[in-house]
Image (cartoon, rainbow, N blue to C red):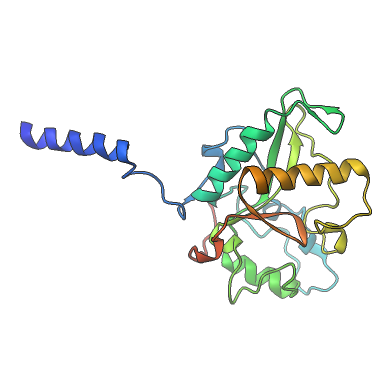
Length: 225
């Protein structure tokens, strides 16, 4: 390569980085750990600890649906979660409790292979909680996340209305018959995700949030290794 061509290449590279030519696209799948160093990943479908294993309504019983405890989200959603975590990390007192290292996020589910969506819907074909795989879930697009809050100092989850994947009215955002500290934690999660991070909630599930426009991202179907 001659000096003129090398100079042109250097100019192109510098200009590209400065103008965002090489920036990640909003619908590109990324690992949120790459953006948020202290986020906790606990993909429940990579373990036997999930509600679908022994639902009486179902006729399938699988110990695991995922091959690895790996989370992927579209870049737009991961950026929003970073904004949320940066805000939560600054909290030192919430609802009368002390958090010396702040509050953080634990992710239970993110991108979900569409093949898994078919299995979940076969076990529990209720579109109020499991999106019809024929049209696809926002999880199948990497645009939705299921999460909760933790004490960053201890790693303990903050008390919430239900466990993950509780298919009852108690899991809804408007359910009132809860201890005051549980309602305060649910509201902290909602206010942070909606008002700080700019995400959308799903009324029937206190743990589910999604990026605006998630249903426009492509449906995907691959397992993490």
